[in-house]
Image 1 (cartoon, rainbow, N blue to C red):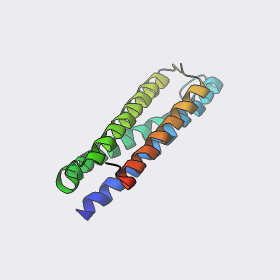
Image 2: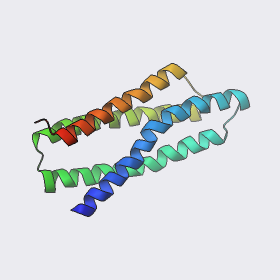
Image 3: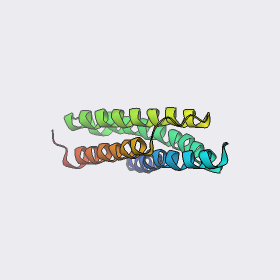
Image 4: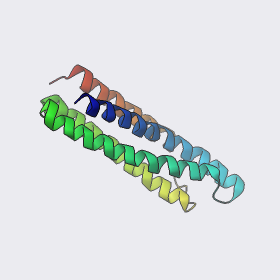
Length: 137
């Protein structure tokens, strides 16, 4: 079971990298788009980062459910954690929609929106860590 925990934590860390980095990269990608007038290397990097971390997110979810079933037994605190992870997954999916739009040259969200959007993910992660460490229920 320790290896499942290790794999879970490694994949969560990789997924979190994208959750924190891609919204910020979209800001710089838009600036590059405005400067070049076309798809540039920053866009390619952003897409690759998002795609790579999607796989890590799937592995994190699978190992997380495995741990929930086999190790923790869906204790009450775990319901809170899973709800918060679902919120973070929705955030990630919306980020993916923004990436797809950006690939088409549609940068509809402002820098301020993306910065606030990025910080909301930090709040969700802090709440998840609190639920896991404190186990309030």
